[in-house]
Length: 443
Image 1: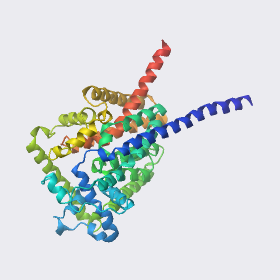
Image 2: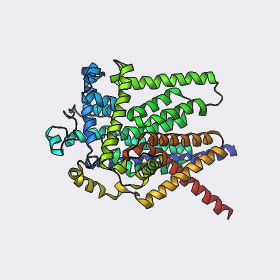
Image 3: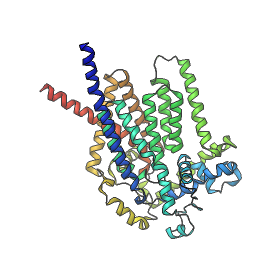
Image 4: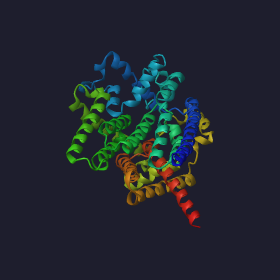
């Protein structure tokens, strides 16, 4: 009886602090999210937001004339069809649904034309009004607190509640997250889907249905997350339940492939009519776009094109850790957004810990965290070893994917790495505290 009473008291001591900690997390997440949403109207405008709002009409077309969304070879000059070939669809669907929930606001009747001036685009009604812009931003920004919750859960899964708290705070306070996920663009859905994929891979590495769902959402948020599909396949085949026979693993891979392709097919109606012609057309359109971007930016500033792996890695590290949040990739409309940009960055939290000193510090912590994870894969055992191995491989594959595919120094392209870096830094910091405690104890 004494043992039972002691165990009950010990259980109580463990349970109540955890409950209070969960309550504290909920309150802090609520406050951070409230501040995040209140500042949505004051984020500097990006013309790509207008394009996403313009394309959100696909939700309306799907309910009225779904065949209008099909790819047709004889209407290649249609800008909407071109965007369906180029861009992942998830963001425009979220904005379209958000418009309907907000009372059926109409999208902008015209797409933004980069060859025109700001005033010309406004006269053409390509510039969304304040209410429409806010609705569009809220339609994707609502994913922020959900992503924070997932990051917290991942931190707790790989190490401890300390890792969970640090991961959450690093993510929620990241200057790039605060800028890029508050716009009506792909980054909010992308970061959410990347975080979801990380959690599913660590929690259910041998579940083909959940792996396919998460990685397909990431790919359909932005194609730059395609590396995560390779990661999920590796987890499914090699890093899941090692006792699973190879024959069963093959059928799991088959189920994964069918679901991934099926979700992508359903989310991209341009494929429905002629998938074997439309898919190559999409690949060709993206190749042409990248070539045009390289030529255009190369003519404007030849030094910006990143031809070598070393330059790409340097630019990626600078964008991820050091450079101020980038409000625009081109200088066409900097004069028109100058006032809102200055107002936005007058808040010190919007540029927090950026710069050479802060960036070098966090880069060092990221490398240290990765080293500690690799150390865990060599010396650890069981689920902790598997988590460390999976997390290390995932960030590496996403990094390699970006280095291979992105020759332009656009900061928002590095956003899918942020969930990984926050987890690496948090893990490394917790390991540092453990080393310090061991040294203090031995002393």
